[in-house]
Image 1 (cartoon, rainbow over the protein chains, first blue to last red):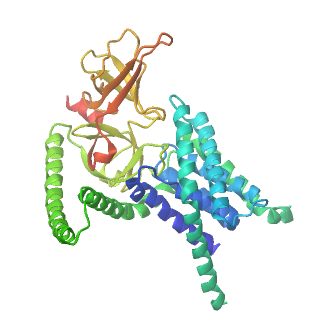
Image 2: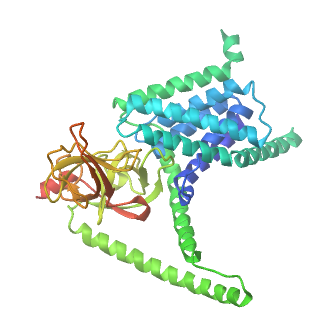
Image 3: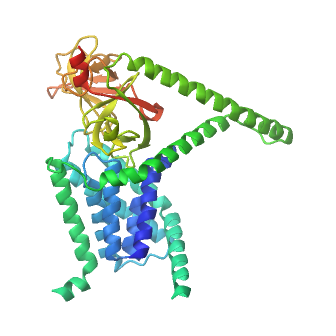
Length: 165
Length: 277
């Protein structure tokens, strides 16, 4: 649970970066999505479930015109990744790229469904497809780097904890 | 039952979070969610970090623009380049101060033209997701800002306040697909709604085929939506298509105010403008 809390704080930092620094780039990468995928694959705990929900909610607080949109999308992403993680071995950059790409498509589909039900859909569909593909490609490209950083952080924490025990 | 929950705690808690988020979404969409218990606290925590980050981002942008035209790597060029960098830094610092001074002076002059009660604010963060067009201001309910107030600049309307925390306000930009600004064509007084679109950028909707709208026409607020003061610049018409089917023309517009070039804004209430008149 403590590790999940630490990762959640890292997630909040990612929300901060997505709303400020990363706007220097032409496309803002979805770091929070990559984090939720990592959680679903490597840290499938109740703390990770709550963390994914909370990070989605944080994105709603900072950006969305309606609460619950990203919270729903990130929860669906986590659940999907968790259920399919039983049959996936993710120990190569290519595999992590592919999983994040598919998770981004799941997130896009969840957002489209929620948007269609609760918000206006005028002039929406073509743009939505473009955004989904763009987000998915960017997230997939940087996923191996983010995964490597998270794995390094996780093993460092485990090493710090082990001598204390 | 307890054994089942313990064994499948992750998928069960995950499903619970999905249903909880659907519940929050439904309540928010229907307007039942009057106050957000968590959002203001989160904004209060993030605000100082966003202010610092935005300052650093502006500094990085300035350096990027400084280095854009630099060429060559010879020794003499390198020495002269270093000298140039030092002088550019000093010049940019002075120019930035002058530009900020000019912007604030313009805002001050503009402020004298809008109703008493306008509140100046700075933009500290943009939307963290490309699906939404919003931004955060460094002033909130404690500074007198209320939900529904218009956010404007000397160049025109930027958006309206949709959520509040004591020291932060979330603004829905006019280019967001969920936004709508009641406008009139300045030349012909034809009415329509300017809204964002994920497809091709902002558009003007509900303009009948019989209305005269041309490329280059200026769109200003009608004041009838009760949000924006009347006569405020909103956008310029860029494309007009009259299709054979459908009741309305398809009109593309370019907004007068873009987030990328805006730092300081004024938050005003259309009601105060009407009372003053």
